[in-house]
Length: 219
Image (cartoon, rainbow, N blue to C red; front, side, top):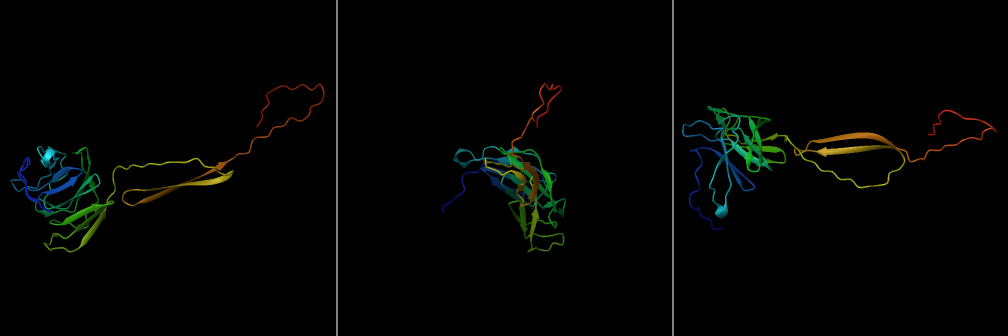
């Protein structure tokens, strides 16, 4: 396809090197990188292209828990993920996650760490899993391993529906099953009894001139 770079876009609020960029539903997300003082930044910016595809404004979002450069940024549905990278000269194994809502990131959480501290690696996230490949470790060795880390979402949504049906009289067991976005499954069971038999009451014949008093309970 034919393509060319258009006029220069609105500048980032600061000069950055070795930063990471992801996109979700028209929102461009810029994470970390080294600033002009070559210090790993924790800052996060978002911008949305307007008419004509131009980004005219960058919004500062909640900072990552720690500065990062040369890490891997990913997104799984509305969950932004930053894995590994370098901070104060040391490779890192930590993974940060944040939910993107209405083009806004309000806070970050710590997710399960990578098995090894890495930088210069690539990553992708899907269905509750992070896949990281390549990069270098603390021995400066260039890696060929592919690593996987499973994370859980901090929020979940569910829906349920029921249809009326005939059920026989007697003892029954109900079972419910649920699966989260990471593939973890849980079940629950409960027993109950259906009694459709109508109550039967009877009054036996009484002798003539018999007087009754008190309370009569019919079950």
